[in-house]
Each structure stands twice: as structure tokens, then as C-alpha cells.
Image 1 (cartoon, rainbow, N blue to C red):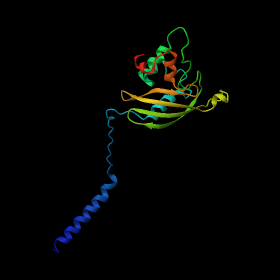
Image 2: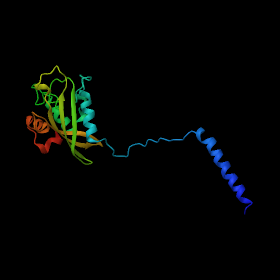
Image 3: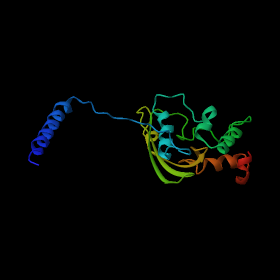
Image 4: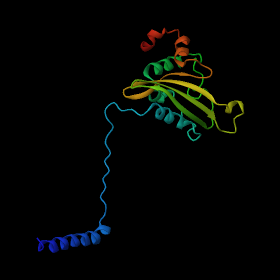
Length: 187
């Protein structure tokens, strides 16, 4: 047994020296794998509303969530109601941008707070403040909006908005065109 101890000790020393010599020269190996989102994934309600209000930062003055963009932001029934409202010789009930409750804006900041959310519905409060100093003091006061969101094909869409001037955008449009709430999906 005494004969093997020097051999084992020498082997351990040799391995230690080899490791010490090669260790600083080895490059660490790392891998990064990005997996696709699972079926049914949709970003959070706050992210959806943040992406909407990002258009109101003063750099995108031509943005409108209405018209051709409406289906990206509003649920199909609300889009249909807005289309009905925009037809005819008279100005409809919707005479301003419902997202800012304004006709003009400079630079809006939005603080989004999600109150409730599940896989199909979300409710959020958004406090919107005009930060452009060209607007008067009254125009720069914070305004609070309540959003009801629903899942449409795994994406959040606005089902209703309550603004400082309108308790329910959906109900305003239904009332304007005398459509019973039960028939809104047939509009």
C-alpha cells in the first residue's frame, strides 16, 4: 500500500497543476434559448394600456385610436358602435378622442393601475396628465379614466371607458343611436 501512496499523491498534484494551468484560459460556455410564448398568451392589461398611451407622448400627433386603428384597441362591438356613430349628416355622440377625452393634446403622461384581471377581463384606472406647458392650468389637471378590457382572440381590447365627462362610452353610443344593450352585438 505504501507503494501506491506516492503514485496517488503524484497524480493528485499533477491534476491540480493541470487544472491551475488550463482554468484561466478556458472560455465559459453559456447558452440562451428564447421560447415562443405559449398558446393563449397575451401581455398584461397594464402593458396594453401603456402601449396605447405611448402614442400620446407628443411625437405621434397624427395618431388616432379610431378609424382604421380602432380594431387594434377596441372590441368588435364597440368598433361597430363607433362606425354607426360616425355615419349620417350630424355629428355623432363621439366628438372627441375617448382615450384622452380631448380634441387636442400635447404630451400626455399616463399612470396605469390594474384593479382586477383574470384570463378574460381586466379593469384598470389610468390617471392622465397633460404635460405640455402650452396648455393652460385647467388643461394640465390630471384626469382619471376607468377601462374595462376583454380578451378578443388572446389580445386585450377596450370594452368600455369611463371618462371625466362620460360615465360609459359604450352606453353613450347605445343611447345616441337608441340601440338596446342586448342588441349591441348585432349593431
